[in-house]
Length: 134
Image 1: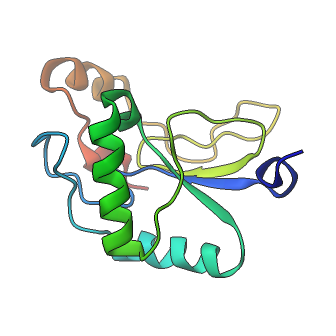
Image 2 (image 1 turned 180 degrees about the vertical axis):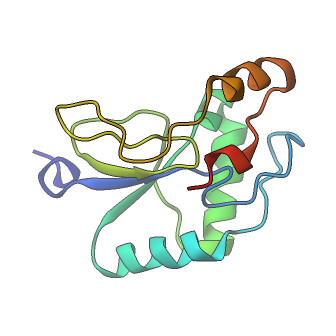
């Protein structure tokens, strides 16, 4: 059994969670670090927790992975594993788009964005972050 399956890991979304998302500017561009999340990641790493970058950018290929690795080294001081998949070892994810639900009930534990958020995304390609504030 791998160590991550035994001890678990935490996924951290990149754009809008770990790095400021200031619009798509190509695969090489990753925004400035979000300091609160950087501090949280560094704290988890100091505690011996495995942290992985959990991002859809992986689907853009090797150039995306290299850009993320470079960003991690510069802003975190370490290259983290990068994935777009969760598995049974993932304990939780930090993500600007997730809606947490109560285990085995499906009851939302946070405000669920309205349907207009989805419809607006269809038109402009990104949700309004203000609708996700709790």
